[in-house]
Image (cartoon, rainbow, N blue to C red; front, top):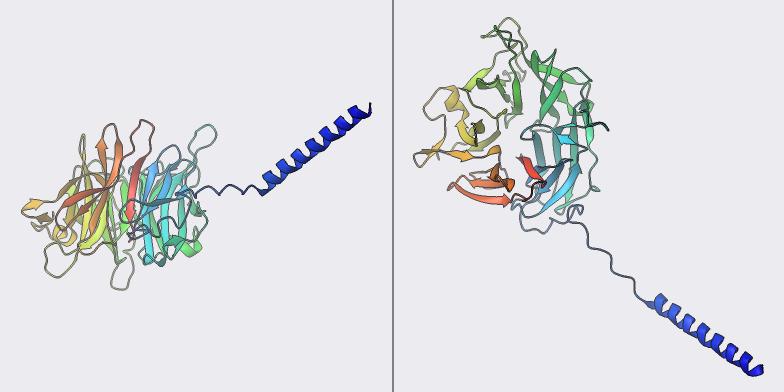
Length: 398
């Protein structure tokens, strides 16, 4: 009996010693290293990427559209916002301004967006604004960044779309329609008191046949003194309105319209039968080497099975001169693509960013055209796969 008790006590002692040793070993085992940061949620991931950041923004179209900021080379991008559904426009209408350099500064993005309810019924559209700060090449804000709602559409009362931020970043213009799509308009809104500080700048009424005269993609000129936009469908007019010498936009005058459809006069740049529902991109470029940088428009055109971009000298078009469509080396510059935007982060001349259909199976990607020698390079490749996202729009840092 005593022998059995001794064996039992010895076994218990050995068990307790082994248990203590095992627990001590576990306690002394170093903790596993933390997982590496997710590159799309780390605001500093592009700080040392080797090219200017944030050079441009783009949207990936998927079930829930997503906004990215990218460096100039297109090989490093950061997701800053994911929509609940759709960022409006085809291609998406985006406006991006950046004030500063690659080490420090602040950026502002505006866009129109539409959500849906649990039954996938579209909800009223809204205009959103996102601000961010760059310090030592990194985004300071926690990601994703929460946007500011500037304006919400009143249910069942028309629509609003295609916002553009003023060069100073203090105002937004946007297009819309009301009265069962009979009246289209351009409104300007002050950012600091949105949605209340809103002014009507331009408006259309049905023409003599009762057809509406639609408005597409209003854009500020680079000095803020003009607003460019397109009128009509399918026969289009590329036009602008301009401030007077006192800095005031033309007054709405229902009696002075030359064609009886618009409520204030606009200046014709180009009339055409093909279009892509928007102006395109605006930039400065001394394309003829005369020492003066002209204001030019990268203007998208749509045809049956492809999209092209032509570059227009605004003043030459208004004067009806032969050099309206910019030419180099004896050839008009025509690019196959859409959603164009001139860069401001490259030396003169600027590059032209645009989306293009890489192939019917690999989707839409992003290219840059060097306007010095008309060479093209791919910045962001299309992602292959039937359900893969594609680039829906791009805007360079103005």
